[in-house]
Structure formats: C-alpha cells, structure tokens
Length: 364
Image 1 (tube, rainbow, N blue to C red):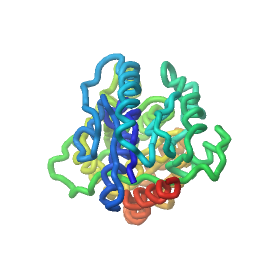
Image 2 (cartoon, rainbow, N blue to C red; image 1 turned 60 degrees about the vertical axis):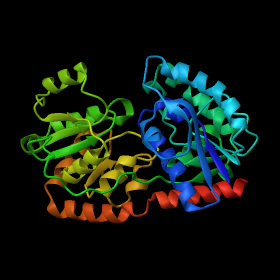
Image 3 (cartoon, rainbow, N blue to C red; image 1 turned 45 degrees about the horizontal axis):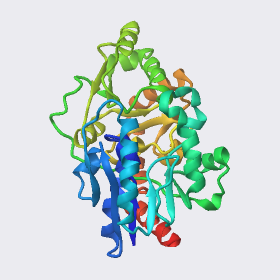
C-alpha cells in the first residue's frame, strides 16, 4: 500500500507540531509493515523536519522569503498534478486545508487539529480568515477525517455538522527522547516556571504574566522562562517594565534537546491556553518529568487527566493560586511527576501509527 502525503503543511511550516506529526507518520509507517510505502509530495517546501528526515520525499527545501504563503502553494499545486500521476497512491492524505483537490482518484484522508478559527474568529486576520471556509471544503470532500482528540471530534460535529461515522480519533505523542538533566542549563539564575510556544491570542500569555507579576511569592523565588514564540517584542517589553518584572522574565530559543532539558529542570510547566485541539506540550512536559499546571478547557483535561493541576484560564487569581500552591508543596510536585510519567505512557507514536494504518487499510 502506497500512502502519499501532500505538500500543504510543509510549505507553510518551517517547524511545528503538524508537520512533525506527518514526518513521524511517514517515517514510522514503512517500519511497521513491509507492505507500506510512504511518500511526501512537497515539490518546494520550507520544512526543517522533512528536510532532515529519511522519509521518501519528492521536492526540495528552500529558504523562507516574503510572500511564500502565496507563491509556494501555487507552485506546488501545479507541480503536484504532474508528479502525482506517476506515484500511483492507494491513499492520499491531505496535511492541511485547501479549496482544490488533487487529481488522485483514491480515498482521501484529512487530519483536523482543532477548530480554533471557528471558535475564536476575532483572533485572526489576513489569510487566516479564510481557513474556516477552506477547512469546511476539505472536510466535505474527504472520504474520512482524523481528529487528534475527542474534543476536536466534538467540535467537528458541532461546527461543521460532520457525521460521527466519518471521524476517527487518533491522538498524537511526544516526539523527542527523554534526556538526563544537564549541568549546563544556565538560562535562569533562579528556579523557573516554564512557558512554551506562541504568546498571542488564545495562548493567553497576558493573564499568565499578570498572575506572575501579582505574586509576591513567585517574584521572590522564581523566574518565568518563555521558550519559542520569537523574541519579546517592544510591546511585551514595555508591559514587563510596567509591571516591574523585566528582570524576572527570560526568553530562550531551543532545539528539542535543549527543550527537553529545560522541561526537566523546570519547577513547573504552565499552560494557560484558552483552547487547544490537543496540547502537545503537556505530553512533552510529562515525558520529561516536569509537573504541569494547565487550563481546564477544551482538550487539555482529556490529555493531562489526573497528571495536572487545573485552573480557569480566564481567572488571573486562579492561575496565580494554582502556581503558588504547586511550587510550595513537594508532595504535590512529586505526585504530579509520578502521575505524568504514567499518563504519558497512554500516548505513543506506535499507537498513533497502528491506528492510522488500521484506518488506511479499512479504506482501500
């Protein structure tokens, strides 16, 4: 059986959870069964995971440039039409949302990650405003849809009226190996709370900042370390200065190895997002033995289970209390580490690959 994955996410993401998911699938599926062949059809892409992987791919990586989100899809759409004819796929798996369908007359599978654009339309602008319409078209034409959580499945049913029989829930897993605590992690001079990812919109970083800034305990004993999401912008820096926390908030870029080490050293990982279709950093933190405090909304309780301290992400005071109560209790921290270790075992790429292959076989 030959599975072909399209170019879409690889032309959009340099790095990111969705593109990593498809590289994991494309690399692990052939190892799971000798009958399986996978190909990523990405004539021109910008993705680092794909470029560095051993996955069979058709295409090459180019440097990011202004206007790539308009130019690369057009190039890939034209090139893929010709190349796809020679690949003879048995399954065609779309990696993101497009208004146009590739010409392969075989079962089409589509993965859906969240319904954030439908739930929070005011948070988006520019090309992102078109994603709900593109997603609706892609879902309608797909022969079957993979949802990465039960919450995303429920949102698909609610917002796009998708038949439950058309959806299969297949969760994700953490993608990097656990590392030993390194002696050279000196990003912060003091113990630190860890925040990972983008900081805009539904990520709700502003409320976390306020909760941290209004805590005498946290300010006196901890730094707040932000990993990824780009350097702090001028507005953020002014905000830090306004609240008197400029010396307490740090930023760090990190590859997987350093990120794993940062999780391992953190006093607490805090995830205040208003909405997640899955919440992969939760598994990453648990994988590395880091205690977790997170929002009680969307998919996060589904993923973290009993391995997190929960708070209402719209309540700054509740966020503060959750952080303070956790870091002050060795018993809570020890319990969260142990529960996280057990919880994370429920999610693996082996399970994801096995369930995905089962779905593919049912459609051929």
